[in-house]
Image (cartoon, rainbow over all chains, first blue to last red; front, side, top):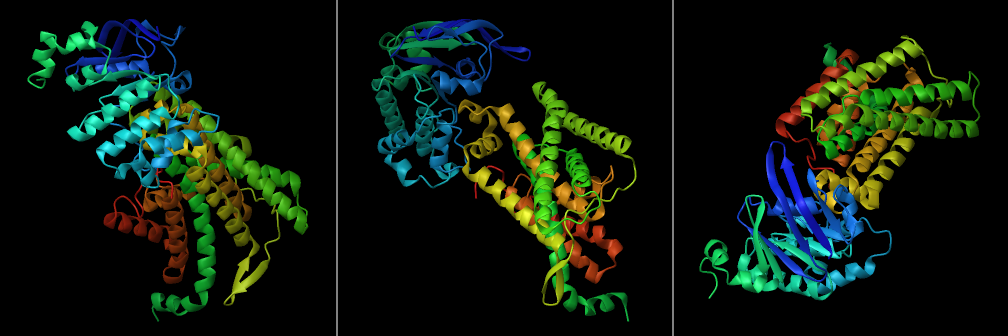
Length: 236
Length: 316
């Protein structure tokens, strides 16, 4: 087991955002966290990259407890986070944004940058442009490749399809599939449940800060509870 | 003949002299303004104790010069060495004061997510503590500094003499400002500073240690502020309250150029120095501060975000 979360509680002041959630992610899997706005999906990812330490419970990554580890140490441990809303550094160039992704590395990363430019030729064309001037789709590609610059073994993706056109969303999910093929484990939070479940092996459904139920992605895709709440008429 | 015209008639002759003096003062303001603007860039707060960082650099280099020069007349080689040592010691004293200030006055508040007003009070408290401490330890009278070099006229521009003091300021200042600009724009740590200024949380996700980056920002700004204190003190000496007015003006220069913007601080500093200098040609010398602040208010009325008005995040 790669990542194990046990009874994690996260509080924002007086508000409890996560009421003791437990779940796990296995090596090589794509796991998705589904749920309505405010269910606690983003909080879960923020907890998993040290931005919000749980007030109780434990997080174990590759056998090591990482519950209280600070955010800036996560990339060197092998966990990389693509935050909600992409959070590109707007006044840095595309190349500088990629260099930021490799900030924790002490070795040479020129090859990795070239690899990102091969994967995303548009980023190579725009390497000298400021991140803030890219389109939403380009920013998402940059956010993902920036996260990949640290060679993560676990990639956390928060709403990668948010605000993007359907054609771009397909492209982004294609990229996530490629990343998984290359051996990186992926935990993805998505509003777009249908697309996420088609990509994922397993899914957890969150409601009001707890995990309501979980199953194989193929089963969740046909689960009436999911279809009613998250998919509507979007399948078939 | 009216006061105004009598001064105006001499303006042509004085132009170059005033420009040289203004540029030199402006470089000192710019070096202090950089400290305000960098801290604002990463923390969105004004370090109102920066004046005491300036004073720390001045006092440290004052004692160094006393030990090195001690009333003698330095040779040319000695002068070069003394200036370099003065820059290093003044800068280090400024950097240490800034580092301590961040640890004691700001970091505990940051840990507790204190409101901005708490930082302001903390800064004012730290500032009063420091300058009163200097007053108690080193006396409350002005002490003149042992000059590290003889202030000869080195050359003339269109008849206006250019003294060694101005040359030293411009050389040291340009080296400092250009090095800092390149460091922030090109180095990895500089990129970390810019990342924190643009989006601190995302910077931490990339592996940037926010606490260390904030300390580095204080150290860099403190170093330049300390060096400015040394340069400023060479002709006029040191006194415990010496930081107040130049730092207030440098803060104004930082706002004038666009707070949070490195090059804005340099432009604001130079502009303020030059305007002040030329105001002497038009008005009486006692109006120098009135003119400087009137220009500040006028510029901010037209451009509320300052001349450049961008952020520390920008690399060039």
